[in-house]
Image (cartoon, rainbow, N blue to C red):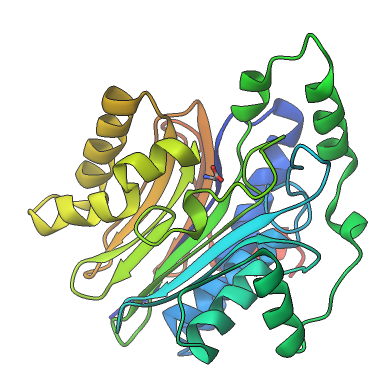
Length: 314
Ligand code: GLY
């Protein structure tokens, strides 16, 4: 099987001045994951590391750069899933760690559970030796500014919610295993303790070697109502190709609950799609040593892996 990785940097509205940063961020993440796959690494390692790259990148709403809750704190959700055995691990409302996706993987591999939240997740992180970082390390000037603006009497919270930016990755490795990983800071000025779609299996992501894998982004409450990730795989089980399955599920979410979002999808034969019903979604994929990426509907930039690596200075 030829390895393939697809990543997204979130569906929503990407302001002009952030477009280039978002595009290079997804490219860097896709290249990181692809290099792991090319060396014979697993899909699980590839998606975890690709997401960790975006958690470090302040252009995205995950890890450093996460949006703030109503109290001005970062609370993050993440999920990872292994298509080989349907094992999955997730964390919700976690604070003060750099890489929620790595903690989600530890939940999957080191506990009998699938989701740990808030203080329990933090205690588990400590027990696993994950260093705690000062909360401010994850807060950018931009997220602080948006949080403050949202508290103003004449603010329109809906405006900020269009700027989403969850990150995710899906991959198939040379052994034919698929995996999915998703990580987010959630919604700007969300209530303390709000858990979104990202932490919920079947909503924020899903992976099953028999069908394929997907990672979702968009309005979490809408995604949860239609269980978007699993719905896409359902359509694929019924014979739809990744692109048609993605479009059918996104269209259902829009018409049934008025929700917008975006998805990346891969089938067990390595066909892939990146689709969105929002204005934009940054995405990138690498297959056959060729990188494709885009931000706007219909946009596809093509580069060889070699070219892309040298243009990014790696
Ligand atoms: N999809 C990210 C969130 O709503 O939390």
